Image (cartoon, rainbow, N blue to C red; front, side, top):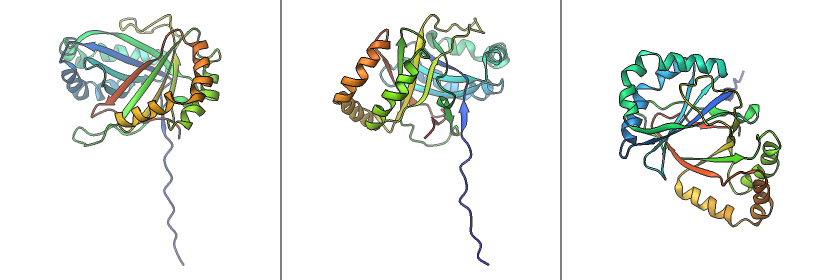
Length: 256
């Protein structure tokens, strides 16, 4: 009797997280590599031991003194518990002076939630410290809206904007909107009184991103169809963050 091997099925993705912090720190000149080395060595597993997820860490290629990272939580009460455990614990006590010495400000923080249940990050593996990987480029687009995204913008984004992005060669992932709950850990401030919508895209490198941007800017459909929609919802121009993952950042994505 012939035996047939079965094609292994891909395990279901790990989706993260119902609550997400998008954190951007402005650093003293020349201190980013110092903070990244300290963070990747001391603050990854130790934060996750308290119940949160350290999702990704980045260098901003346009601003050499900016460090960006993302972490996630199951819900707002557990966020308070996890942050209290970490920032009240021995690891932060041992290294906070060194970390804080690199920073000018650390309060540019958006508290977010997935715009849809399936719009969370897919979490891949975290590279080992000695792994050699090509990090690629992650681009975060941040829209500051006149009203909460749930009042029409998320629907318009998925119905009109996502197809146009796909036609230009980009499939956005990680669609997030402002989490409206009060900050459950006031010791760490977050931006309040704002309505944000944030989406992410992946490129192999800056050159691929530049080619895509040129394609999009030359699209008559983008100018005639998408730009008026954005103009009706946006309070200000979009922020574009071009980010390169650090060596210990997880591979992040979204539904294919």
